[in-house]
Image (cartoon, rainbow, N blue to C red; front, side, top):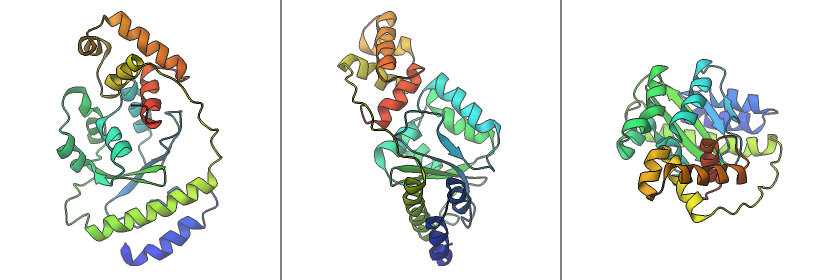
Length: 232
């Protein structure tokens, strides 16, 4: 891929639509296939651009699991660290247990044995692979090429996507923020209540208030919005 990079970057830069950007990103990436492209600042958890080669059931199952188990630690990692990593590297670093493994489990269910995520220009671009991405399959030069291609894609997407309205500033109380942070870590209301030493009903009240203030449909969506806005 590295020696073909200039041609690929020009193809991405000259794209006339988001679909052309996505198609170009899926080319010449060795064992990797494009999974999705999404903007962390969007308030709509459904605004994820999936490549046409992704199994049709995957987006639906991912959305359902997100509502059930909360934000995946791997999602938090890409938002907070802004570094590129494989799914296996994220697993070794985070060592998730219990419900926190739901995203890795979902990927495995769809034969996505590994993947690569990178955050460039306010866009997260995720790839998947049917094989484990060890050193021989994902060399440093390939990582650098992927970073360069995704940087070009971020500039192109910022040019092609409609401008987002400026996010309205929202004031959340310290306890509302704490409840959302626990939810974002995958904890459920009873666990949050135990951690905060409050009743489950009180915790639910804080979550409901935060959901309304953030104009979210569910508390989980509110947690996603809070993470994207760097409130928690």
